[in-house]
Picture (spheres, rainbow, N blue to C red):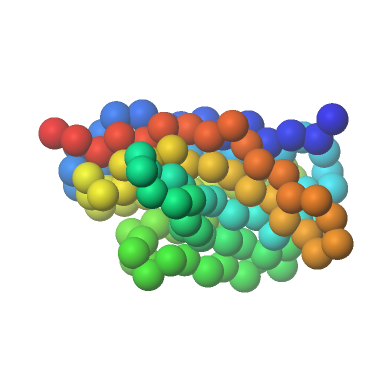
Length: 116
């Protein structure tokens, strides 16, 4: 069964960096738009960044210039490089795979905590 598995979360000090990875099982994901979302306690899940199958990226204004999404189709993996982290970036980060006409996939989430 196709699935997404995130890794790379953890505790980091403000100003630090983390790289999240999302490993997708199945080559079909290279046809999907992949994305990262996050959900902080008491808040709705929000879009962080997406990357299409052609490599076109979009980042939320709140992370523009600090976060970078990328993908390696040969490894069926999507990354989120997070630099200059702020306490307000603290959330559970979820990987998503989306394709028009198909049901979306979600990972189980990975916790990112930015605190001194």
